Image (cartoon, rainbow, N blue to C red; front, side):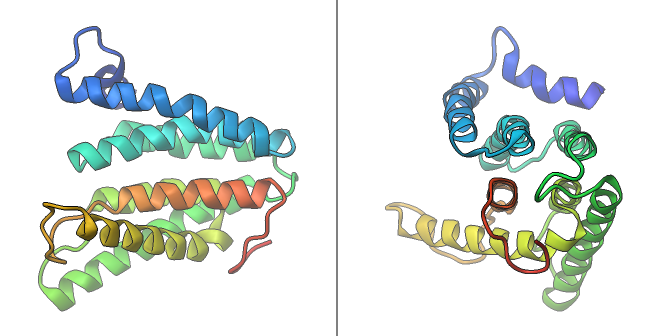
Amino acid sequence: MKQVRAGLYGLFRLHPSPGRQALRRQWFLGVPVLWIFAAATGGDPAGLVALAILGPLAWLLLLYDMRYLILPDGLVALLALSGLAVNATFAGHPGVPGLTESTLGACFAGLLLETVRRLYHLIRGFDGLGFGDVKLFAALGCWVGWTQVPTLLLVACLATLGGAILARLRPGQATGWRNRLPFGPGLLIALYCVVWLSRSGGTILIGGG
């Protein structure tokens, strides 16, 4: 709880730093858009509640990672717990994994990305992923269940690749492919897309109905 309060304190403190002011402004501008989108496309109550809770948390973590290249542990834990709570509440609704599947999703996602991280380091000799990304991916597994973890990783890789290409096209940006690029935003975008599609009548693809 102390880490959750620390992450939220940076957002809601009365006299934040200029960087935190910008982050807070972006968060407050983005949340209503996400809620309007959820209300318009959320489908049944399971989809609406999931998107209404997921959107602000994912947006906040995305902003933190983009600005500071960190994923606060407390907020990641809050994301995981909220996913378990939402899925336990709406188990049986279309696209909602049960509590057991959600728990397995967290374990599978964490082990999968940690394996990828270690193999990358073994082959290349340096870290391509941070352990924060592993913890975040495990939290995302709580939302989607183990059957959707491969889909989640695929969409996250595509989103991150797209972001890297766009970054290279921006004037004045360094063009080396070894420049540090956060993976968290791609993971969070993928989570929102997968939850939205699977719980609002969309079709989702590899490994799950």
